[in-house]
Length: 139
Image (cartoon, helix red, strand yellow):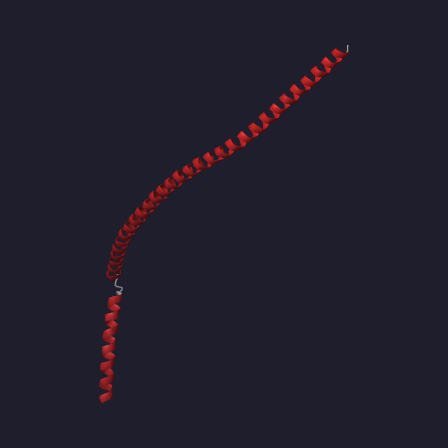
């Protein structure tokens, strides 16, 4: 019976030793998994950063191309507007001259003197006034 009790104690100690061994192995496996995840996640983050930088670089190039294209279109539109503006100004000048000519003609037909006629008469009056002053001054 003493041998049976010793056998049971030995069996219990062996079982406890095995349990401790398994527990230690589980513990070490957990530490290993934690370490590997830490290393792999750092590498994974580095890979993600590299991929993000590449995408950012491509995006900047594309945006620069699009901005340059838009600026070129704006410049060509400005040049076209300047050209059209010049043509419009020429046409407006022509219309204004035609209008002035027709108004002057209409006023002349009804007997209203033009600005040129008034200026000519004013100059002649100035000459006559000067002449009269000289004649009056001699008497």
